[in-house]
Amino acid sequence: MENVPVVSFEDELVALLPRLRRFARALAWNAADADDLCQLSVEKALNARASWQAGTRMDQWMYRIMRNSWIDMARAGKRRGKTFVEEEAGLTVGDGGDRAIEARVELDRVDRAMNRLPDEQREAIALVLVEGLAYKEAAAMLDIPMGTLTSRLVRGREALMQHLGEAA
Amino acid sequence: MTSSDAELAMAYADGELDPLSARRFEKRMAQDAALGEAVAQHRRLRDTLGAAFTNEDARDVSDPLAAMIRQSAGVASLDEAREKRRWRPAPRDWMAGGAVAASLIVGLMIGHGTGQPDVALRDGALVAQAGLGRTLDTQLASAQADDAPVRILVSFQDTGGRYCRAFASGSVDGIACKQGSEWRLQSTRPGTLAARTEFRQAGTDDAELLAQAQTMMAGAPLDAHAEAAASARGWR
Image (cartoon, rainbow over all chains, first blue to last red; front, side, top):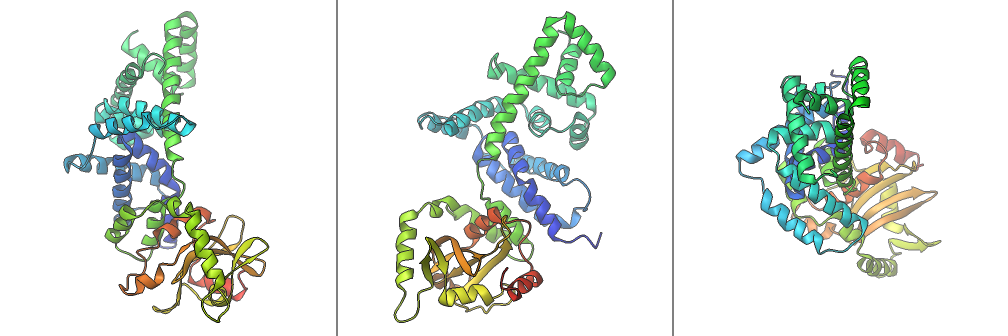
């Protein structure tokens, strides 16, 4: 692998950023936590660059780093969490009426519903419904059997549908 | 609905059933409206989540994290990069500062004392000339003096194929792209270099410009070799 130029690592990581940001947003439930999570994950990835094997899938490598970072943030008490969401949602509501604002309100609504799920269901949903991974890929990444993944998905989705109302 | 039916409906909605199971499920769905409704609900949920988070990822075009990753290739401790990100206003803040930029540019065009000013207005476009123009033509990011009056931050090709260079100086920072024989200024802000040299902290003020360069860039920044070659060709 010596002949793979170093720059390809950075290129690949930069190209992955929008997806990482989205995954972070789905795991965390507010923009501030998601930003911190992204930052932390990218730092870890840069520090762990030596352990990255060129030619393997960077998205899965990064998702794994991000998932561990999210757990670390919880342990270190660094998640700002719930109260922040309410505050943000409050600000958004009084803010005007264009499309960007509507999108924010919708996102806040989905955030709040995601927020009520246990971590294990939320990460399964983030990988499959937000990131579009196949069940097999998601199960491999989470190190769980397929059956466990599908049951987490079913329970998580049923809860989400309930929180989001009939229209989902 | 049984739990296995619930899982089937979900897997069908996600396209996860093998062809044979999918066909069997479709047959049952034709007879059982509840199954069809379950599938439709799963699809709606998927759309809802997809739309909500896709809006989110389009939110921020210029990305300080991307700049951090690029910079990590050769330089900077991550702690320093992190501080940069935390305390920096978003790039759009200074780019939107039209009034500030206008007064800055008028000052630059008047020039200081006898010399020709660094910035001129030609055919409605701001161009770098005189000392700044020469520096953009000749100074290599890979080989510049610590106390050079203009510092090149990065050289790259934009998506239109032009060579562009982000720079910092005492009077103006910005990004200039070579168009024909001219260095056209794509964006400007008040210069940060003079204030910086006292602290010998090259790099701490560059994140915004680098982030903006990142959004314009096609591929990776020029390395030392490519930069020297481009300079030798007159940046064309």
